[in-house]
Length: 175
Image (tube, rainbow, N blue to C red; front, side):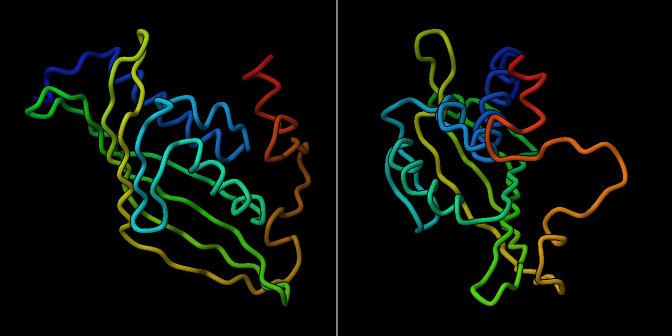
């Protein structure tokens, strides 16, 4: 039942989902893998099936070719199923900014859901099973064919944007 979930379980599940997204976006493999059991089973809507490590080996070079990718999770619904397992369904939206051979830049927006089963492992909750359901995708081409479509100019203080530990967020998060 929905009401059988503790505040601490909700917190651990939410933080695990956020860590996964942040790990992907900052190319922090350890952080992206942190919410998963090593032997978890991942099924991504007909595009991937395997372990978390195999998923990272598959997705890393795909994301590396992109200019930007941003993963967001919302509407995190958590309950115990009739078998007593902790499960969650969270909506995910991903922005994948790509460039074609002719220099055209496009934003590809994907909407889907992570459906995860969680288990206690050494005193913390980890994902032991994930199904990713793809709900809708759409591509939006940019008119400009230069990096202003990616990083617009600003007159304000420039904070370092990066997909690694040189990103401005690491100044405070990993201080």
